Image (cartoon, rainbow over all chains, first blue to last red; front, side, top):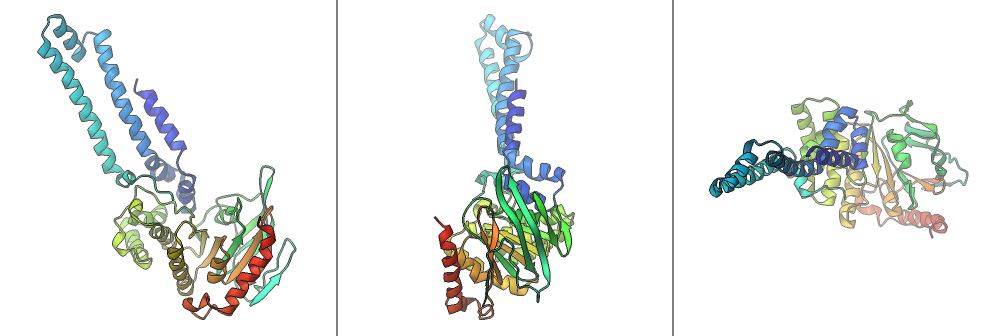
Length: 127
Length: 268
């Protein structure tokens, strides 16, 4: 469920790297590999990370849905079961723990992004 | 002052007394049906600042990118120090109109980028980069990111990056057009002292007549559609009078007027 979002985002971001940055790489004798690693990927990183964030929420939704509807395991099973025996505290605990986990994950991603590509937070400077 | 107006497609540059660093021979470039450059032959003497003055129009930077090896000409060839070139090389460095800085990298990393790509070790390239950062007057900003700098400062980062790789030929693509007038004047003055102190050959594309005459040893005027050399002017008399006196020099003003008179009919 998360795959298409991440892949599509990444590919369109990579295609949209400013031409002048790639030309800059070439004129300073960067190999194709270093243009890829040092220019295209960092330039695409904001959109890649946006894709990852959407991917994370999509994957959480997917996992919980599967646990609720298809396989009676994990958190989904706890929710279904505690609801059926009217043990609501447990049910809500399960729901909130999932929300907490998702928020934690997204924060972690954001932290990672700001550590890896600090200057990007100021937006793309091209003028 | 030497003015040699020629209306032929190929203008003979009066450059016999100079050593030629870069020459283009019969360069043509077509974009599909559009002819951007036709049969362009030009010579750029070593250690001087050569301007390409162009009327505003598209394809302004085509010739510069061909010299840089970023674009391939449809026909013709470029020689740098007598060697034919087709791909980017260590002998040329480019200063981009839009700076082309890496926004996620500090000034230090941006300036050291060219050296990094040449495989220079980290400590060594940072020492070299530091020298050039200081040289362009950004000593306190080496840990800043491009978005924290003003336009003029960003351009100086681009210039330091090009200088740090120690290329003989510096290609400047309207490098000052994105900065404000005051910064631009300062940049021009810096450029003049740079030309005097370093032995690089500069090829400078601009659409400002004043800028071209003010900073250059040789101004080649290109006409549009398709581009060809209309004349080559070598303003020499006021070159040694110092930066402060150039703009008031009568010959400077004469040349500016003359160029405008010859270009006026092409501007609509």
